Each structure stands twice: as C-alpha cells, then as structure tokens.
Image 1 (spheres, rainbow, N blue to C red):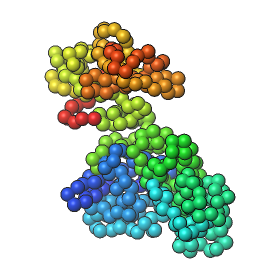
Image 2: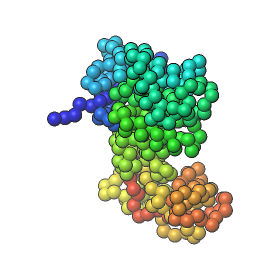
Image 3: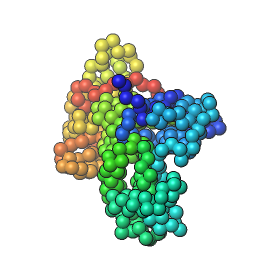
Length: 359
C-alpha cells in the first residue's frame, strides 16, 4: 500500500502583479521528512513556505496536508493558518516583548483551549526540553538571541503540531550558535515526529539537516531529492554550481572534432556523435590539481587564496574572469597573483547542455 504524502503540492503558483514568484511547482513529501527549500534570494522558497503555512493565498494549484485540501487557487480555498495543525518559526523570532518567556510559550495553548494546569505542565516540559526553564520569568529583551530562538521554537512545538515550518530561523545568529542550533532543531524534529519544512539560502545548513532538498530557482524546482543525490548527480548546471563546499566547477567548453576544448586547451574526448556546440563541463574540486609548470590538460591560472579546512586546503584560482576551486591535500606555496597550472582529469564529472545561462 502506497504511503499517503504528508505534503502534496500540485502546480502551485503565486503571482504578484507582473512577477511570478512560484511557477507551477509539484512536490510530494513523506510523513516525518525534514524538507529544506534551498535557493538564492528571490527564488520563491519563502513564498512557497508561506503558502504552506496559510499566510499567502496561491494564485493557482493545490496544497494538501495529510490528504486534506488546505489551499486551492482555482477554487479559492484557503484554510486559515490556525486550522492547519502547523507551527511556524520566523526569522525575527516574533516574541511578544510584554510577556514573560512562560507566557509567550503558553499563549498558543491558551488560544487552543488548554486548561490552566495542562498549559503549565506542557510549558514547563518544552522549556526543560530546550534547556531554557531558568528563564521562564524573564522577558524576551532580557535574554540573548540564541535563547530567544529557543523560546520561539518552544512556543511553536508546545501545541504538538503535525507540521513545523521554519523561515530562515538561524540567519540572525553567529556562526557558532548557528551550528549549535542546527543540532538542536534536528533534535526537536526527531522528538516531535512532525513533518518539517525549512527555508534557507545556506547550502551547508541544507546538506547537514535535510532528509530531502528542493533546490529552487526563478520560481521553479531545479532538483528534488536527498542531499547525497544532489551532490553526487546534480541534474542541472545551476545545482552543480550551488551545492557543495566548495561547489563544483563549471567550464563552458566547445566540442571541436570530437574533443572538448576550453581556451584552446584540449580537455579530452567528447561523447560519441556529440554535435559541435558549447557544453557545460562539471569538474569536482577534488578532481583537479595544481602544478608550477605547464603540461597536458593544464590551464594557466592565477593564485587567489587558500583556506585550510579539516586537514585539506580549499584553493581559489582565476583564469581570466573564471573562478575555479581546487581541493588539495596541503596548502600550496604560492603568492597572490602567482601563475600556476591547473590540471584537469581526462573526463569531466558531468556534461550539460549550454542554454546560454551564466552561473
């Protein structure tokens, strides 16, 4: 028997005036998944989340939550946010400054008709779960940003919603707190068993947290799948250039006499019967190497910078206006602007059609 999706989206569209923010997307999300909507600013990810939460009305298409139709652009159906069995954590925390931490967390329970003793027990339970019970009598302005974020999460999970929606909740935190809160959010997700949807433009967050990722661009979903699938088999040049730390390199090469050629450099044999046109060639950073002298499949480049990471070095070089990333086992002995030679493997990792786009 096929499992009913927790979230089912059919041809979801949102138009603002002359601008199409979400352009007819389709998606199915299994119960208990941690879905991340990932993409650059303006790609439609936040608008999609707001339509899921009932904060935006779709221009077209449908949303079903646990097989219940909650939004339909064509039929004009939009179930209010409070009746979707969902909680949302905002980027701004959205805490009431005149209420104590206890009162902030208790408020949605009071609205939902919980009895006073049940409210108190549940509030104390979630405050303890998030290690903020010591701040119950304080006001939001008296605690740190990280603590405020925990309060916002506690308030969201207190009513035990079946869906958790997160709108870039960590963007206001410093790097150390972001890493800590990623772990905390995953702990919350597992403990609640809710189906979670998380919006971010940070692909490190996406890769470390998601069970599934929808990479969005210009209102469309470029690729949907588990993180390792997106990393190992990116479906488009955009995904290849967006996913990974550092992301893959894209080279616009020409097919000439059955060979891939870039800046007069022969990069190897093209696929059989490949037409003579430009192609995007993808090379993973760890498949490249740097040398001080010229050689076969070696491109002259200028050294830009090197960063030690986890016992390796992420090196950036330039060839004219093309930025390229290389992962080496050790830091190179090179000065800013020094000429080196970047060696390509005999075959690219992936080959894509060239649709005259820049990445």
